[in-house]
Image (tube, rainbow, N blue to C red):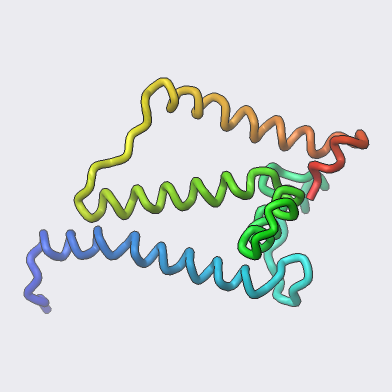
Length: 146
């Protein structure tokens, strides 16, 4: 049964609706995390598969607990769970905003090639280094564990 929508109207509607729906899902997830403390909730938050398999903290361990703290305005506590919490959340917002912008006919936000290259090398290096250092059993580095 044909709904009477042309293919281009249907494609435009889908293209514009998808990022809005994803934004609503992200907002709902943030609302849930803000009202259910992962460190003290009876809700069974999923555990890290890497930690379960190895007993080591991955670079993402503590992001949910850090997000809860950040949503409550506790930057220090968020950083104590995972130093990348604000960066990860900011990256999610920037990527989502860019998706909305392009979906609604705007220009893709571009960064200078030199900055993009620097980020492409530095980000994985820092994340990997963080993942290693937070598992070193030396007193000052233990602070990196969630």
